[in-house]
Length: 541
Image 1 (cartoon, rainbow, N blue to C red):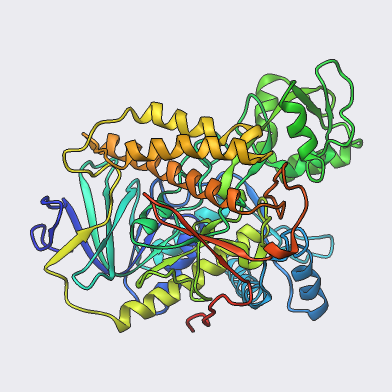
Image 2 (tube, one colour; image 1 turned 135 degrees about the horizontal axis):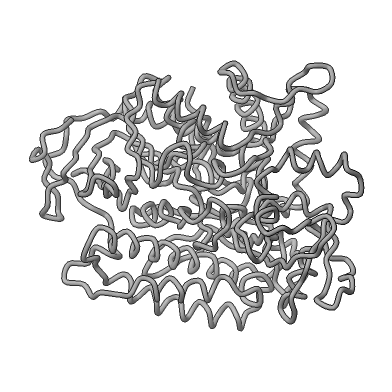
């Protein structure tokens, strides 16, 4: 613990809680927990700050998830790596896939050693291809706490800080339960705050507002794959459950009861989207024809059925209204650009993991829920934690006499006050509509981006009058920035590739086989980067 008055800042105020550590982890989901454990294993002192309660907040903690767990059998690994290459527009990189599969396999086996209750098949062999979120994250919190990590629950980070040399030196945030604010001085920071779902009410995703993107961008970090952000999940209109897997047993109908031909949870989702533009759509799990299959479905995804049971709806025998709920980059692939397997960003001392980092290296332009996402969280969290510990050890210095705060929107001295609720609705009005974000065209994207740019100009000169108001402003600013990066990249990619669908450019263009890297806030720049040319460093041992 640092004495409260030991650090001076350019904000002119002292933090009520000030800590000093080697590695600060921002975010307490799977990626953050794996980062914390690996940083400790590398000999680092670690502080973990979570927006909610580490172990119960976020997308994973609220539901089950598949894992890209593949035994080290050459034929199986080859099939696993090849399975998504075409779907992702051939933007993935096998130099990443192999290490990610290795680290995931190793780490999931550790989960079994730690006592995670994986189900067994009829021969008594554990099936380690999925986890139930509540049990998984409860175990991870216990392991993190027992490892000696200092956990700051309900303590959202708001901005990064740098030292006199301009290197990332920690972060600041607020304490939602205790009140006041905090500052953690650290030798390195791992951002694991998740992606951005724009508060769409997707299950477990309302804390995922792109905070890490904004903080990193304020430090000069680049993002990649932001055009691959139009992930929508099928959901009942009356619930937040977005577990799309079970809809492979569904047929989809118009309000008059007629079947919507070709509609489905995978290849036929665009047909559902097209229908929703003009009329309500209903679903029924009528392809699950036997009691045995229905029982398995209930056991595998029990929370999927809770909203139906509460309303007395039998989804196997009754139709129910559905919508497509935006999950943005949580189920998309865009995020902070990584410079190598150590999961470093282009900003010294700053690392990214999980949904905070672009998943293009293993998924290209398409991902979805679970599986690769879960493996990415485990592996990048592990890589980033180890690398951050190494960076902090090498660059260990005395505490700086002065730190610079990097936050802009919400922190403007003498800034104006903005209705954050109205600003949030304005952002959502640009990213929720299917005829803007799902079926993309130049006119719609251009008009939307102009409105978002105008909103950003209002937000970047704002300040919050209280801790709660500041948090709301920062979240809205992060979502606005995310939407602008998304649409800037989407306008630049004049083709259809991965989940990025351009109605006015419906075909894949071989001349655009590259990644798009965006950066900047007031002015956004885009540059092209070939998959082969990306710099590549080995993960820290």
